[in-house]
Length: 346
Image: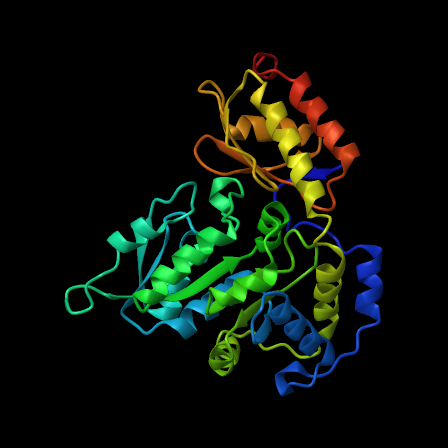
């Protein structure tokens, strides 16, 4: 039995999703003629209280398009220092949008109004880039899936807009956050200009993300999707998987969170684990002890067909998902408990 905890992107389509893909009605989406893509875009926008949606191959693309349509060259984006748009998108903010980035510490990645206020540039000072966008990430991947509550989002958005700043949300795992907070997804559209959601992470679709936005940005966003190489033809087969994911895989996310917390509690009891970050959703990040390396741990796990990734000099990350069940959880815990560091090194 292979247990793959490297990411929630490793899932395979369920049987129901397979059937939805096979039954999809398709057309040429570049000509705007794919009914399944249109349905997915409209559905995604409605779920988040937005006016328009643009289906794209990846979350990186939806994030990059979102920032692109909200900025001009030589402006600045304010975000958490470990945010995905800055750390894991290949320098796209600089290359695609020609913007600089003001990096904030945040509270486990959650930036606040006082921090933002201290980092807005003087628009009349030619030495400084013009502060243009506040970008938040929910959940925060670098911080073990920490999340914002809607009241925190509301406060940030209200302040940002009072200062003439636009709002972008990297909501790759937004539905994981909503599962914990119980906030209404439709309220999110009130507080952002653009929102990126990912269908191929916790929701289990094979490919795809949607950028939902205000109507005024739709035309520019579709143009940028084309420029970035994201125009797809009979994409309805992929869109059908996304529709199925939104209909069937949101309510089950709580199961992933429960299993992640069990893993976190187990790791916290082991002598070769130095610390475990709080487990808020489906991501577990822990630090190994001084006498061991992540590579040694991962190599030993690999002998038992358990996969995870190194996430820092001394850190390892695990991500639970719909293809990680209770049977796999039991196996993983058994491997964690039965192998101590001193026996590994003998």
